[in-house]
Image 1 (cartoon, rainbow, N blue to C red):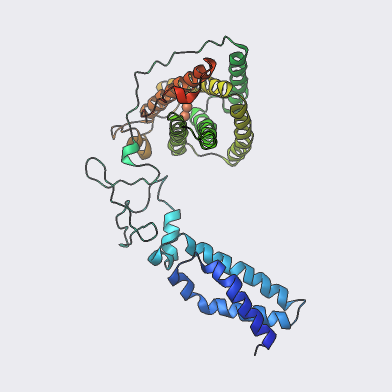
Image 2 (image 1 turned 90 degrees about the horizontal axis):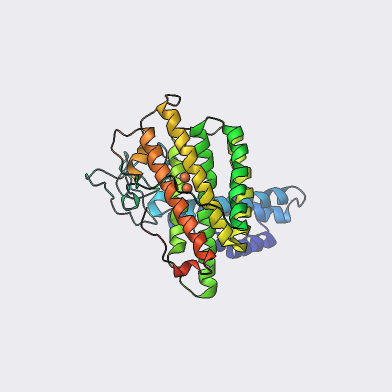
Length: 363
Ligand SMILES: [Fe+2]
Ligand SMILES: [Fe+2]
């Protein structure tokens, strides 16, 4: 039996804390747990008037943990999905890479539909009418890489800033060669974790500038974010053929922390320098992928079948191999090289990126 004070305390908490936690969770989830919630409230209330040293603290800790987890489980799921914890788990555990267990907008093996807040997504199919199986990119984002792009172009560093950019990149090459040596698959995967950062940082800073100055970006926000996404897809592809070891994951963690902040400062201070650094990084990437191709041609690396994600993303023939994938990735790097050297050149001319239309639509 609760005392009057305990009842008042429980009621007060239900009115003040309860609705706040439940406001974003959905009906079925909340209703299903009401009895547990009330039981917890009674425990709290008992603790208030009972043993203040032990029961109260335990009950309070229990209360704090309970509604947070309930609201979190329910907050991002639609009505019917919320009741099915297994389905939520399925969404977090794709079969392979980024492929989902069911088709987009279609039923899975159990006949359940994935939905966004109760609204099922449209059914997406490939050109041949078969189901689209990726959630990380859509058919309209796929493309054929331009393999005719000039791979040998090099920006000769003339100014002090260019030389700084050039030698910064060259100096980074030495520890990279030492660490990876001839493990090009692993090297490609690890370097893509870095390569996907500049586009995101540059795009983010231009986005903020556009908001701050009430002006258009000339398409450069989108162009740089596209570059970041393209680099991330390189990573998603190489993940399928090379698995990082624990210390390599730790290295990525540390390098990302340093590189993100360093590039952020560089871009905020001198976008001219930042884009030139990326231009030279891309030149090095072209070199690395050319070495990768040599190893494949010499038989030192197995020319395994191309990952399914790469076949769909670059619209490759179904019998493509790792060599075909490296070819298209290298062409992408050449495109990034051109975009970034061009962006740096725009600043060198004393102009801003918004004045030069961004090279959109390549990807
Ligand atoms: Fe890349
Ligand atoms: Fe690149």
